[in-house]
Length: 603
Image 1 (cartoon, rainbow, N blue to C red):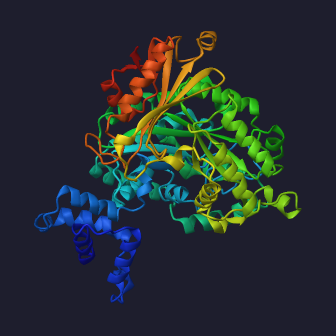
Image 2 (image 1 turned 180 degrees about the vertical axis):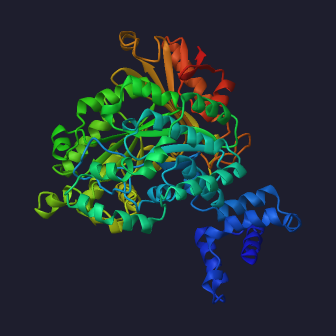
Image 3 (image 1 turned 135 degrees about the vertical axis):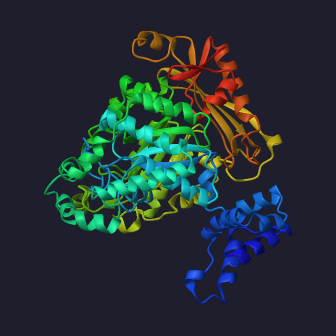
């Protein structure tokens, strides 16, 4: 491994190209004469080796005379999965524990080892199960993995998936958030000690984190659920709420709000700051009281399962949510300042390709909805779901590849420049999909088809600068204005000459009459505008350091100043910002003061 690392450094010193393909060839060449496979080099081992070598052999490292520029090149070359932090933030996804679900959707997997709709083979689910669904352990293990892959972890977006957030007891919700922040506020040594103590406690209670053991233990009960002899909820009650071990665990899964607030304060200046906190829930749980609590916990974005905007399709698929509930949810989420990340499914039972295209058009153009971000993915057939019988009797069929690509391309063309399509597939493994899309590179295929058409693609993810080089002198700020039901929205973005996006800001100007009519239940007052999001792209820049990407060029500050100018000229007296805990310090430097659920600046 040492010889390989030195060869890489030699190539970089000569300013020769060493892209992913060239690096793979170099690794293979090093392994050619090593008969023992266990001693083979691999790219994923390079970054951890580099860290250990630098730490354990400081004199030898110094003797190499590696300046900061060369070391940056080395890190960029051996970092695993660079796109993971290309959007400007390192993401950590965690899962809540399995819980009962109020819906029984036709297409939804019923894996009793997981929260409803998730499968044990999905990557995030595997991590959660290995860590007993413990939020602290999940964050700690993911932090370690990101560090070993070469990703900075000083700016973190936490994404909480699993069961519907608001269906869990409040005591669990508060405890869960506290544990996430505790893991980020603790030192590396404190995390090591806590990991050992917690895992020993779970093991002492007789709770396993081994996939094979859990699969054997739940096999018979899973078969009864899959055959519809008993429901998912009945199985979950038996496994978790009637289990003496899990009852013991649940007794410790509670915390007061005061603990969360203390950890928030610590996180404002600690080494691993939360710059985004995302919670997943259903439209029917979006109320003023729930949103107030979610905001107090530090959340900045809500993922909301819409799936369809056609009442008949929702009913056919056993989805109890109504379109009117979705309308109300979007209205409140936007007024409260949250970023809105909607989930929409194609190829549902009872839907056609034309239905899906109309649904998507309604979602992104009707003023009642207008999400900021979308997960758009096709329905796939999973064993044990109610959809199986419809496939067997011929009343549901998966779209052909050509039909699916046509639908997704149409959606891409239809997407405004202020919307980001975050995903086009679920992380369901091919072995779990009976029929339906199994292509893991479906998005890449869709983008290739879309590019070939010559039609413009305006959605954000397609245009992100990411890890690409760019010339900051070519950036220009543009503004897009649009209306939702009760707000005037502005999307400000920095773009280069190729339409690539380097940063953006979302500004909401709430309707004064609406705010006045609902002032008893809303957290804002008349005359208050809202910055819902500020984001600047580039490989994650370490806090207080300059990066080579789009961050730290003052782009965010200029976006904020322009947003304040727009709000002031429209007659607003104050600007609110829905800041994350780890960005409070930044906004204070921009003239904002802490003001309850938000930070505020006088205009």
